[in-house]
Image (cartoon, rainbow, N blue to C red; front, top):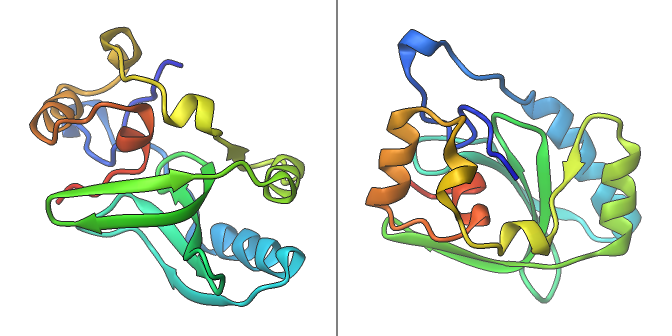
Length: 153
């Protein structure tokens, strides 16, 4: 997988601003997923200074959530996550209903465990801005998931 310019939410002003995902579109998807799964949403959060993804926490025993990259419509489902100013760890889950709904959306793309847990290789970074590559190095980014759904400030 070649990662796209701006996927980290860092970019070079000279190269221009990367695309962005509309938060309301994500919110609609999150409510549809929650309704189909049969659980309420506890919290909806846009991207910000600390993380580059939208977040919908679901009322489940496993602390499940739906994540969406704020620049590209990459969506995944997590069963538990840990994060603070020093790092972020998500436990990705392949949920067939979530995958089906996301794939039917004609806008969002489901990104599965096989991609998110794969080792970050230098040839994947060729489209990224130098500032993105530098941030990935500084934060010790080791997997594709850590780059696409990052908790960098």
